[in-house]
Image 1: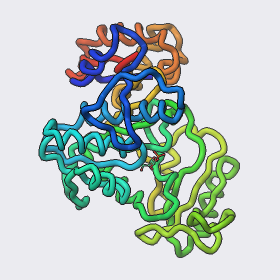
Image 2: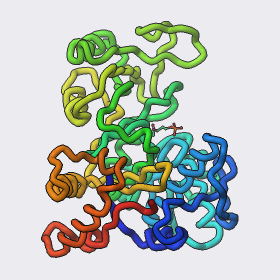
Image 3: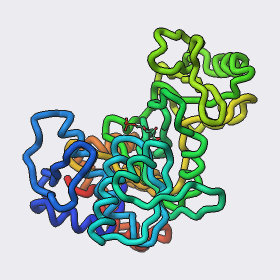
Length: 355
Ligand SMILES: O=C(CO)[C@H](O)[C@H](O)COP(=O)(O)O
């Protein structure tokens, strides 16, 4: 993959590495409460879950260190990485490294995390200017960085609609995912909010639209036994009174944005969990370090690299998985220094925070 911005903290992170070593600095964390002042180098953990927590914390820390500045209004996302980012942000506020940051929670969970972490909160209001937002995504389409949220919501106490409004109005957005969630073709559930009156007709229409590619199930409240495709007697009803359909794709979706458009045009659909936002950056926690991708420049660089390496089929996935392409990317970075589309940030682009 990887496009890349070097931001101020790129230098900081690089200074933590040993030359071009592929060993990324990891940070001890304790549950969801990283301690800002207790950063230490640790060997890669033998426990895979603590290792993946450490990787997620690197993504969260990088996101906060790089994009959050004093005085900002910051959208606070939901999910494991966002929880780590909120607590890290709280730590930076408590030691005075950041000041006057106001958080806009995207969910009940993020509001609760922020309250515990000491991040001052405001409720989202229409016309509020949000400088920057971070969020988790359940899965992300490579290159476009279109993503899916809302797969985990089993109780209906969260609002995908409100969360998407915040992501929509924010000036800058970072989505944090692991490398396993960064896919060339997204599969699995797309959560779709439908009016509960007439939900069955809407579900049938969606089923017809994606026949052979997806199954449609109405989401049931957890703890209510086996509900089956109709959601049984206790379907989830969201805060806004919608039912949630899981449109479960059984094969990779070639273009997530197309699916979003098709869903938007169906009567009875009130919203869905697909995010399509430009500009958007992905901070990807990979085994070998962090990878930062910006969807405004990805396509251009991929095409350019494909031509330099003489392989028309080069994809973001190739770049992500085959480090051999990195020299080409660096080379291109220097070649493009005079080209109009490259702004200063872009000129300073480098490809991985640490490999
Ligand atoms: O829907 C989402 C953001 O709104 C997230 O993708 C979801 O919350 C991820 O949860 P976790 O990180 O705990 O798997």
